[in-house]
Structures are given as structure tokens and as C-alpha cells.
Length: 403
Image (cartoon, one colour):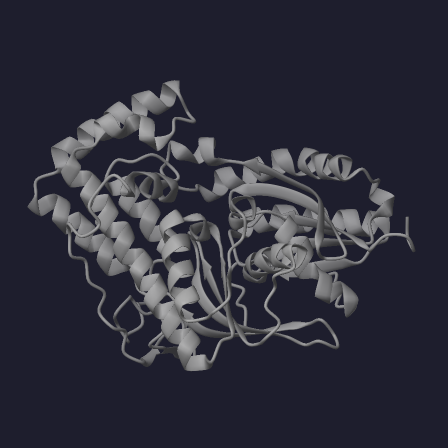
């Protein structure tokens, strides 16, 4: 097989609640992409429980990797490298993937490649854009990585000679990530899990202008890493670290989450939310994959308009900050990735506004928007070409940064 086909990289991803493995040829052609989801397990808790996630990864890692190898139609011996997510993510979950990948690479005598999860999301877009033949060629590109754990803006540039990518972080969330805000508001309103998908499905049935949510401009300043949102003072017991600059392209979603809570209290929606939560719990117990539209009878027009207004405000903020940063830094194209990139309103509105400005824009397919291992194998490709192998001391880096 060697000499006849591009090198084969096995990617392994276990940063949160998806156990995933994929085989990618030459950094661009997906031969297999297997994901074992834990959504049903964590739905009962309304969010990911780290200890349970780690245990599920231990159960699934071996069969998921075997399935990925089988679907690719190859043997383990035909692999050229093993790539694994180093961070950021949940420490216990990351360790499962890293320890397995280290053992596999050692046993096969293949190089081990460590990948940043955030870079993986960016390469999910690049991978598909290359295959479609519509990858923008001008740099820099501005990448919005937006998910349940992250909301970041990166200026991304590829070095043509080496194939290496460099990233400059020009915007980040100062508190909740956008996807986290979606999930928390969904839980507050008694929706299903994962909350982002429920809000996306229900928002089209309400009036997006019904509730006037506002985002205050973020003033450039510095804050300590352990400071509370909106404060420059460190929390008690925190260790002294260098201040983090706060950019006008940063995001903050804690305020709108609180605004939704205040709205439900001011309009006395607590009882209706409690009734809906109980009724929906019964429905989902009987039909775990129930589409949100089939639960519309549990929602009054006021709640649907609240949901629609919330989504419209969050999406509007993501668009404003992204386009403002693109203009300020002279970006030649936009790459949108992460779980929230699956949101239909974000896709439609941002595509329209980017097109009006003459900015090429690319989103991942829905299958590659959420956590997967094909993006890890694709992001490992430049490291493979440069022989940037992971050391034997590789371990989980839950707070790993990009750029």
C-alpha cells in the first residue's frame, strides 16, 4: 500500500463526551469516521458529567477504533501514524484517548502526533473545502470556533513551503461559551438535551423581535485569568498569573443567560416551565430521539418567542464580532467551525452578510461540526509532514491554548 496511496493517519478524539476514531488519507480523504455518542447517558443530567464520560470512553475506545480500521478497509499495520487530541477538554476523558493512542503507536512502531482540539475544528472545515475545491487561497483567514466549551476568533495562515498553520487568537469569550449559553438556557426553560439543537429547532416557531436582548460593547482592558466575569480582581485563593488582555472582539454570554432568567421570573413562567419539564421528561423517556417539533404542543407562543429572541441575539452577536474582526484584521475569508456551526440561523445569516461583503465563507458539514476524529487526523497532517512527533511524556492538557 505504501508508495501507492497517501499516508494513512488514525485520529482519536476523546476530549468530552464523544468517543471517536477515523482514518484519513493524505490529510484530506476520509476513509472512515466513527463516533460513539454519550448524549443519551448525559441527557438525564442536563449536561456532561466528567466521571461518567471517562468511564464511557474506557468502554468504547477499543471497539470504536477497531470499527474505524475495518470501515477504512485496512489493517493496523498499514497505518503511517496515530494522532490524538492532547487538549483542551476534560482531563479524565483526554487521558483515555491519549493512553490508548500511546500504547497503540508504541505497539505498531508508528509515530504519535498530538493535536489541539481547537485546531481540529478548524481543519474539519479545511478538509471538506479542499475536497470540494473551493478552499480560499488568500490569507489570512479568520476562523470562528464556536461550541459548548469554546468561542474563539483566530487569524489563521498556512505556510506554503512546510504546510504548517499558525494561529493568532484575536477574540475569546470572557465567561460562558456560546454553546454553553444555549445549553444552560435550554435547561432553564425545560427543553430537551442537547439544548442547542432544541433551541435551533424551536426558534423558527417564535418571533425573534419579541424580546429586546442587548449586548454591551466589551471595552479593551486586562483581566486576571481567575477573575470573575466583569471583574479585574482575582478570586480568593487564586494563584497570581499574567493578566489576559480583553479585546473589543471578545464575547460575553453570561449576561444574556441571566436576562432570560429574569424574563421568566418577571412574566411568572416558572410553573409552566416545571409542567413542561415533567411532560417532556415523560415523552423523552418513551421516545429518546423525539424531534423537537413533535413537542411543540408543550410550548406557548410567549416561550417560543423568548427562545427565538434569545437565539437571534446570540447569533447576531457572533456575526457582529466576527465581521468586525474580519474587517479590522483584513481577513480574506471566514472559516466557521464547532458544534454551534450547525445552527441553521447562524449559517444563513452569516453566509448572507459575508457574501454581501465579498468574503468567502466555509462551514463544516453537520457530521463534522460536532466532535469527531476525522478533524484530528486532518489537523495532524501538517505535523506528520514536518515530523513533529509527540514525546513519550505526552499527557492531557485540559487548558491547552491555540495561538
